[in-house]
Image 1 (cartoon, one colour):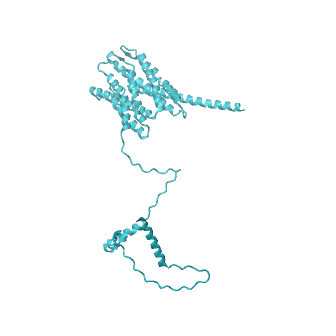
Image 2 (spheres, rainbow, N blue to C red):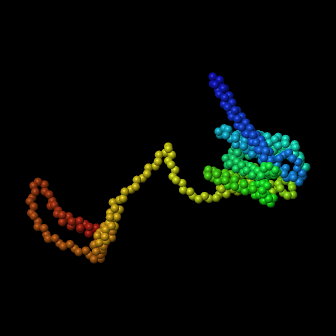
Image 3 (tube, rainbow, N blue to C red):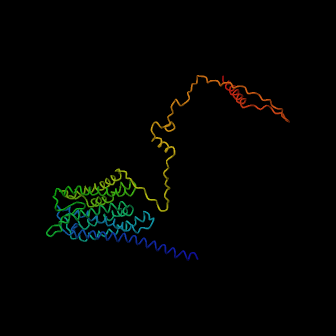
Length: 404
């Protein structure tokens, strides 16, 4: 009986777990593939990435700049897939589930490999096999996307950093290519994380290539670290909040390489990208250690399930305080010693411990009244009050004389 009931229930639970896992992996893979194809399509349309051209050996660095974009597209696609799959993670899922999900996102991001290898067949670069090289760079970017997607699945501050740096990189690229979209203009060669606009001179472009990515990483690190600090996260989490996004720029340039031209057209942003991760961490560390001025917060409203504390009523003024206030309003000549607490010595009896006190005057003898004999039981004579006092004084004198 029990086996007949437990069998379908177990199959239903197993089926639900399979559907949940399939949905999780499908979302990670599908969204990552869509993100990679979308970025490539946008880059092709704006002229940021141009793979169908012939480049002389002196223009080889322009090809290297394209490789950095391709590797970055693959990594960011894996990150987007991990962010989308995070909403479908089962409650209480562990590191193994997140790792499998990040691998699925990296597989989806690998769609960049065929989408770049196909147009690279029409590219000619002296001394380079474009199809093989661009395929390797895209595959390495997708492999690095495993770690990026895992960070996006695990840490909220990593998602903030990925989003901030990714949006900023796209804004810089669009600003750089926008003047070349006008009729009769030539599209410039745009490098990842560099402001390559035509309205800048060659010297200004070279300087911006050196400082753009570190400055971008520093600002993003401060912003993300400050947001993490406002949420009350741990100090270590705040300090490392600015690492994730700039690390993708560093990894993309590591995969592409520094180039080999004499003008260092690709080497300058390469070394700038090597410092981007450190600049991002520096910004978040500054956000973690800088002191904030103490803010005065209004008292929190009582929770609905907890009664408010009783308030203590103001104590009425005591009678002594009222009497003192009334006495303070009198003139000095009407004040009494009880009002001021100051007594004059003339009102007090003088005390001199060396002068003997005057002896009391002897009292006249009291005439004795003859008593009638009592009937019945005889009673002793009753002592008078004066006799009782005399006896008490004699006892006291005897006791005091013991110490002499």
